Length: 408
Image 1 (cartoon, helix red, strand yellow):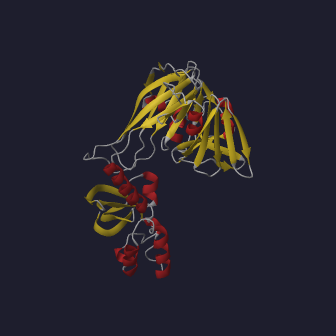
Image 2: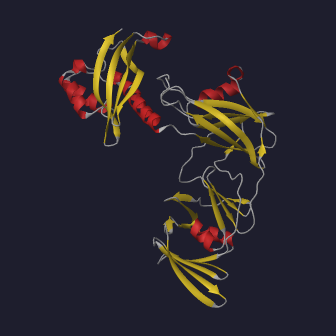
Image 3: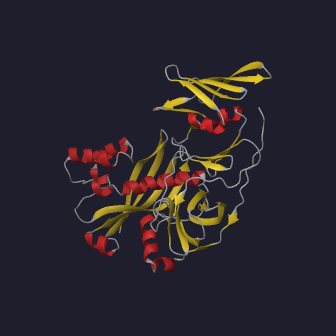
């Protein structure tokens, strides 16, 4: 096999068209949305490639683009791919393959193990791309950052990136422009990239989605034209420091920016930056308590016993242990929920989240009660302090203990 060198700069995927003035979004499926770059050209296939067991599976017909031919036998699952002096034999569902080389009239056979076997999906046969391409003397390179694979027979793949100047759109500009305001209000809570354009500018809203606390920030590091007509935005989500004091409320980190439309027709993006493991765990606990707080008004503690039991299991069962529900059923006065039609418990505002051990957190906060007046005009009717213990059971966080404090 000939080993060839390839340098890939600016491979892209997850394209989002900016050809209208409506916000557009793209939901990434981590096992699909794969782009193929073959000998300096982007390849569009009738049947999309996908990832399985960390290997890209490609339709068998793609081998024709590698100047090879193939034969299949549907009854036996036999696959034969051949090109010049190379023959590859495989079988659907079989984890071994045979490679036959003709070296000046001398045949050599080599049986090798496959990390993933060929498979049929519907009427389409898929084969492992790297294995097939490399044995047909192609070089294969995967760019995880941009979710694209380059397949090259010889030489270097070189794409020159052009930096694109951009500016952040301030809040006042958004508020004074109906199109921008609609773009923002319609999308800032959902993770994704959303865009619109006018005669001069392309406007882009990047949202990191819902975060359970304050302290997060989103920055735009660069925009480059990686291939003619395609802009790539590199953004970073910055998480709060482990010991920082942050607002215990849902936040939605985002940025709106704009840049000269020029000849750009596609926008692609990458959001890097990971939450610290402790912070991510803490956020899970925070979300659990906040989601539990949204269920409190659904449980009437003055209902008959059988209805209370059914209601608690339905609305609390996902968030608290079965033992705690049993304790509450034995003494409903110790349970959170709704006593009157108004005011009602609307939410839990979290004050502190303290890690007690690897398997336990203590959360303090207030149950906030509202009436229809506060719901319309703002404010609160009353609040009552609470302390909760959250423990991990079989990999899942659950509220294990609940205690009321003072009412305000």
